[in-house]
Length: 188
Image 1 (tube, rainbow, N blue to C red):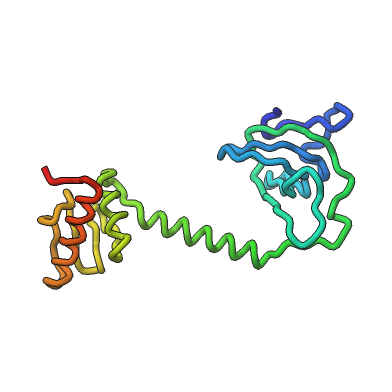
Image 2: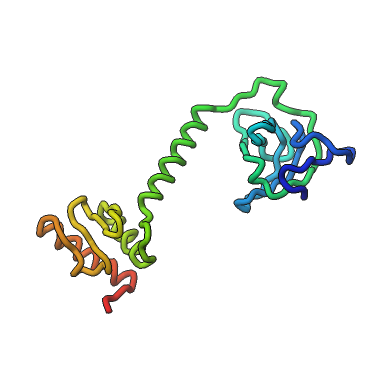
């Protein structure tokens, strides 16, 4: 395997142009993902490679493509070259579909970031995650804000529940006690 940024030998063994269109590689990424793909395009300025997944070009409406930052490639093995490329045919990428996938991924990442407490213990995060299954919650510093009115402070016991109406406060205390019991987090 050649490291990212190295020239890749072509099929006759001579040094070839890095990520030449039509070359087939086995690719390993820093994320641990591995795949086989045909180089459809390479931008040396931005250092991005577009692969069509698989070892043979696919005909038809649906193709899996990957756009990879070449600096995230930890290894490539040259597997050959294909002469049958979709580049000479009428090919298209569903840009609306790609944009929708990107927007969904961004929303998911933002939602995941909001759900992670900063500077809180694993126990606090477990309690937050458990409460979030039944009640709307959010982090406010190290406090858990439930239903935008009831605050649960560290060490996240029922005696640490403040604010809100009596009904909301009692509901949060009850759910908190049940979740602590379910998580086997007992007060010491």
